[in-house]
Length: 188
Image 1 (cartoon, one colour):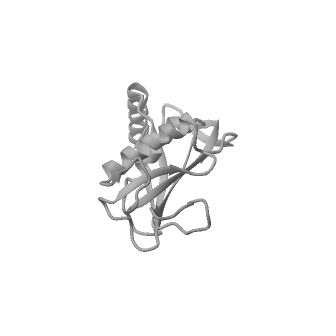
Image 2: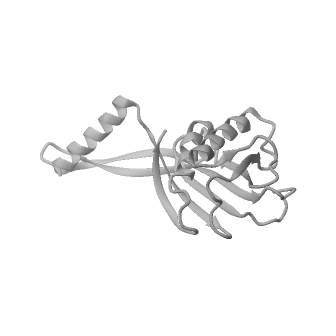
Image 3: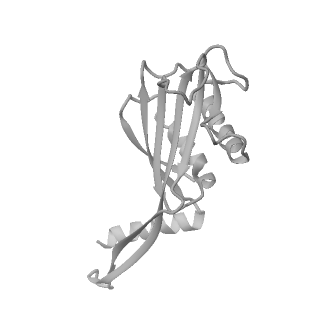
């Protein structure tokens, strides 16, 4: 028991001293006819109601960077071929109160009591939908060609703070197997 306690203390100390935090999440890929091929032209567009904000501009740049890293050609205008990638994002601002009990140990390694910790946990979602560039309105009922879903929960209620990690999670297992969910952890 003491070996595990020492390892946990060492890990937490390293995290505290380096300031390194992680965002944990799951990513699931869905394809109607296989993933979009690397090298394709992609234009990033907003989900309705999320455009015309500085927040959107920041997330757009982040997703464009990840698409480039994944091997796509990012286009600023509407392409005549390739894909449009629609970004949809949200966070549960209110959060969910969770309490967990952690055992306390005495110097002999015996349980000496329990300490309760209460935290607010927020749900975060990032969805990327790929449509054919020929589509006129992605917010219509047309089914996307591909979809990437990132789900995460954590104590940060600031989506801007965790979006870089969520975008890395989105492409961490790209192209992945359709319908398979991958658990991923990325530094904040």
